[in-house]
Amino acid sequence: MQYQGVLRKMQTEIGSPIQYYMIFNNDFLNVNQVLDKRIKIDFIKFECLNCGEDRPIYRQGFCKNCFFEIPSAGDWIMRPELSTAHLDKEDRDLAYEKKVQLQPHIVYLANSSNVKVGVTRKSQVPTRWIDQGAHEAIEIVEVPNRYLAGITEVALKDHVGDKTNWRKMLTNDVDDENLEEWRIKLKQHIPEEASAYFLDNTAETQLEFPVLQYPKKVKSLNLDKTPSYSGVLKGIKGQYLIFADHTVFNVRGSEGYFVGLGID
Image (tube, rainbow, N blue to C red):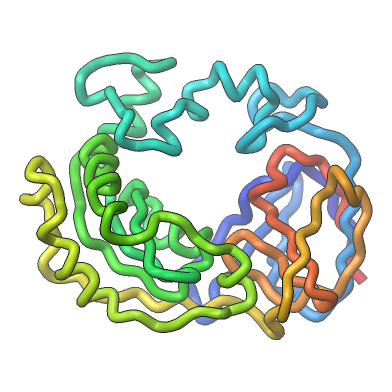
């Protein structure tokens, strides 16, 4: 089987295990179906996810010009506390910012390598947790806009982590945690503006990833340094492909790279 196209974040479907799909312009691949098969990845060119030009990717799948211009790459994406649409203040494009920021958002706890706090749009639950490789997660606050979620996350970061150790996540060096106890413990630290939105009755969500073999020590595939790679696929977790030789490939981290995929 041969596929060709620009890499984008894999789409997912909840299940036991989670189903993963690579979507190309005129085709798609259910990645679960090629577990235990050899995959060859060949980097061909860049293709910015915004302008489509063959320019080096800067961040988030965008070339440098687009990254600093388009509304979907504003600082408030990574730092929700900087959101201003609720104040009718524009960052790059107020109509876009209102569409994204002024909708229900969830502050959650997820356990990928350790317990961490995060923010996502309600419509992105449980997709966000899957993308982070979390084997368990729980909602703690549901607020009407991104700003309130952001200031809640900032307040809780003083008492719980906000980063995932991707190496621990990929080697499955993780412990189960009682996230319901964590949720109750953190309630007192929620800012006053968001305290009324605390969710009293939420339960942990358990997630099962399609992994046949976890690596003991990961080595990351970088297409800039290694433009051609071949390996036997042993698992998918988060947005990573895991290969038999302990190589891992971050598909989302390689958005905007146009590749050829060969599957034996």
